Length: 178
Ligand SMILES: Cc1cc2nc3c(=O)[nH]c(=O)nc-3n(C[C@H](O)[C@H](O)[C@H](O)COP(=O)(O)O)c2cc1C
Image (cartoon, rainbow, N blue to C red; front, side, top):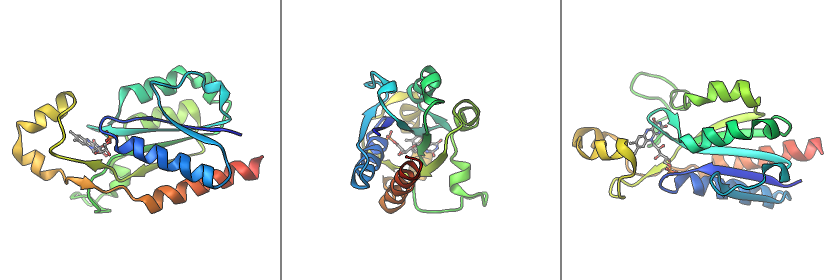
């Protein structure tokens, strides 16, 4: 039983979450590898797959969705989990009073639920460094809008405890099915 943790990441925060999940699975006794979706060659080689992406402007990164759709035949034959790295800060409720994790679900999750029937999905707090070089049009645009930029909390908000707990959950589900 080998698990693939495939990720799409623009600035590295999601890559770090994927690496941590893979490490957690290995600690629980399951061989696991984290890899960028761009580098995965043979999905069929793995017995279970976790797919994660950063969320930008309410969407998963395109390469993550493309990966999920391209490999859907193999993925639907295996246990799959999805995660998204997104909300910044530590507030659990947003300004409109909504659950932050619910509000941060990327738009693609509904379609991927139907397509892949994942065993579970999670939203994790992410990380952002306002001084890092801008990547993509959204971030370049943000540079021109100091007020919006200041409204986006800067820092590393990744909740390693929640991430580790999820890895343990996945491992025990896979081990109890084996
Ligand atoms: C311009 C911009 C837009 C963002 N949009 C969203 C969003 O719509 N939803 C969300 O949950 N997080 C959003 N975020 C937060 C990122 O998803 C978060 O920083 C993530 O952890 C980055 O992951 P990465 O370093 O792997 O790219 C946004 C961040 C930036 C800079």
